[in-house]
Amino acid sequence: MTFAQVQGNQEVKQALIGMVDAGRVPHAILFHEDDGGGAFPLVLAFLQYLYCKHRSDGDSCGQCPSCGKIAKLIHPDVHFVFPTASGVLSEQYMEPLRRLVAEHPSFSEAELLEALGLEGKIPMIAVAESRRLLEKLSLSALEGGYRAVVIYLPERMNAEAANRLLKMIEEPPQQTQFLLISHQVEKVLVTISSRCQRIRIQPAGQAAEAGFAEAGLLDELMTALLGKDLLGALEVSERIASLPSRECAKAFCIFAADRLRQMFLCQQGVQGLGTCAPEVERWAGKCRKTFPRQALEVLDRAVTLIGRNVNLKILFADMTDRLFLLI
Image 1 (spheres, rainbow, N blue to C red):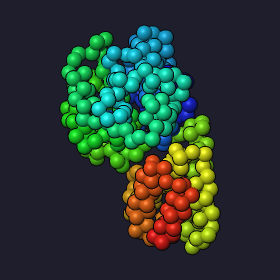
Image 2: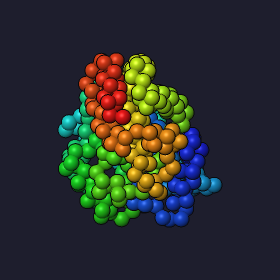
Image 3: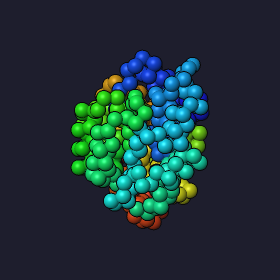
Image 4: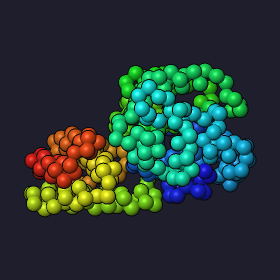
């Protein structure tokens, strides 16, 4: 995977290229993406550029042994960690991950679980994974140069695993690169995220189209709620419940939660964290200051119930009724 093969996020690509060219690569980078937003292929392109001995014109050659091994997820000095079934290490699931990345590198969380045969389960990154990672990083790089660790969904780490990872990030072995991909950075251990260079990945292609759909539904829902139009809000909730899949419904909740966090920052007058979307600023001026925080709890509850196969029409009608009372 070369940078040229990755759609969108030109500014992010240039920033990553600049880090490598200047020899100033942060030891830990946290990529924040929407589910299926394209961070994984971007991470692979970055690793290829970092390891490639023949890089030129801001990209890896894509043909040398290092590029080939990274593209196929078989480089001995690049380790992958992701949520799995209880007691099973990520390395035991590498073959299905390789097949998935070969077919669809911008995979979603649901597609990963399907590839691993874990649909309907809530996988975690357990402490055994951190122990195994410590063992691997205690050894010298097999091919010299950098060792890299790609952690997909660090928010799925249990407390003990997260604390062990924190120790590694606080005192990283020499020439060791941590690359974290998160969908919910607020759920990543704060002491971990605060030690990472954070980069926001903007969705491209199909993920962007999905984002536009979510934005439209959320705008309609908020307009109805702010207008005290409960029937209108419930009509929007039925359309949310009619999204193509439960994962799409979950993605809507995650997108809405991100907007609510922006609204909270906007209401608090926090500066320097990025410009809020115009609609978020409009909502912030019209709703109670308690609304964003309380609404986040409602959305977190909805995400949990989606995972428990609750009827979506009932779930979103209840969610909308709760939001109507809070706003």
